[in-house]
Length: 241
Length: 241
DNA sequence: CGACGCTTTGACACAACTCAACAACCGTGG
DNA sequence: CCACGGTTGTTGAGTTGTGTCAAAGCGTCG
Image (cartoon, rainbow over all chains, first blue to last red; front, side, top):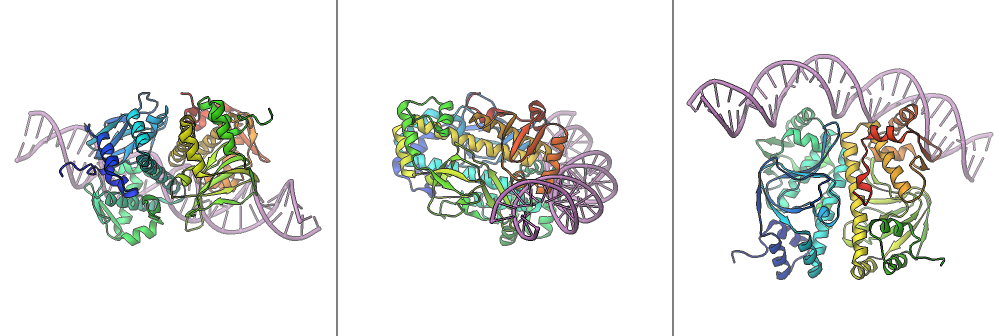
């Protein structure tokens, strides 16, 4: 069965939340028949844009962010393979933040109307998509907590704990080692820090034998130590519990 | 007609997004027939709770927050009249943060199943609720940007600009003056600051003739000045644009 | 009246930022 | 193949915004 409907990363993710029927999996597969290559640095959508499009990220890394007048930016999230990008902006009129590809990537444009038809025909699929959106929102909330109430060290630790869990959940690496092409500048914009301070924090984590980030890969040496430092609880990422 | 279906704050808010039919307004009104008084300080839901309930906040103030191991807390949002609280947690199994009443308040419990029936019967109502949820999420994102990339002064200014707009949109005050029963401790937990520093920041805002917070009321003396300081753009709060 | 919750202020400490310089790496073109 | 420029990473010294600790002022409510 070479083209089983369940062989997309998105399908695997949603299927872990609610087991989907053959027909539902096929519908999901039919959504994703049109992969498009995008280059590193390319903007997928930008704030205030009117032709709202959504994508399934099939591979590569992206980020969503908002820019400030003074040139600073705050990265909201890092979509990775299997994540849906900009879903809300097709359902509504507002596109409140921008998306860029951080690496060369493959995305799958989604038609708003097509999604609507799918979820009316397959309500369980709608529930699964809603769950995914909800999980994304929970990540934003957790991010807010991090920036508001954790210091730079804890915050960075938390970030990598979450990333490790996300990467291993979709099968792209283990909790001990996974690809991570984020530069210290990008990390800084996500963590609300300076690139220079990110560097110092990474050094501390390395010296404490918790985590090493090197050459686009993350190595977690002490998962429990890192979790303890971060105050990380993974409940919000999983379907169970 | 004493009980016109449009006389709830929620109805007014949603109606501003999509004009709703008589039947839709009635459905919305029927959702809100069971107001319950809650006392200041009372918890409405708490993290990890299993019997997920949603509420329409009819009056009074609340906050949603997450607690950290070390006793700190991060306030995520301040629901006010017309806001729906905990909608996601009835649709899904996860309740990822807690809600408390900050003042004596009146809430209206919502049945998950009843909501589902309403939105299947009245899809436009579903769209309106989705819009409201989306707006809430946009506020969380803006909050994240504030904490990550604005300093204490800008951040506080931004917070009050948003609040002023929200309050005046639902008719509870003007952009120059509105009720605001938030203590400096509560503000601190929302803004990712210390109560002491909030005090210093409020003093600066007062001395710069921008904003005074006194006796549970906020007075904005210079709306444009405050907006400029905050880098506030209200697009994400309105249905238009 | 006293007790409590909230606000205000000052002195000091520290985490994170800024500025400056340099080192390592990488793709590109000669 | 090497030389090059640009991007990314590393480190140090000094500054600043925000946190910490301590104490006092004020309203309000029982």
